[in-house]
Length: 83
Image 1 (tube, helix red, strand yellow):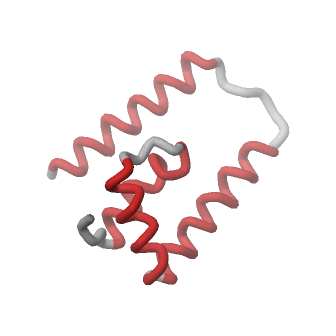
Image 2 (cartoon, rainbow, N blue to C red):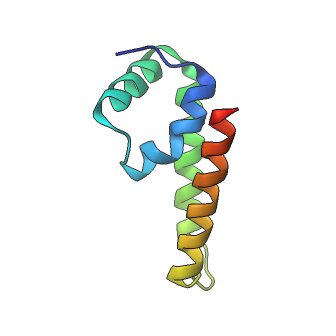
């Protein structure tokens, strides 16, 4: 297990919330949360945001559009991580 920086935590938050972090990264993620109040608070804010957006009235995006947005974000995020 390696220690994560706060920046790495922010980059991994979506995967964590979606339950797609690999087991070794999940262990590091959880260990970081235990010692970093700032990242713990950020995770709580992200959970609240997701909960609020899910409960907002309105129309859902078509599944294909939502998939395209998620794919584009992941590609963009992967490009940023390589820099």
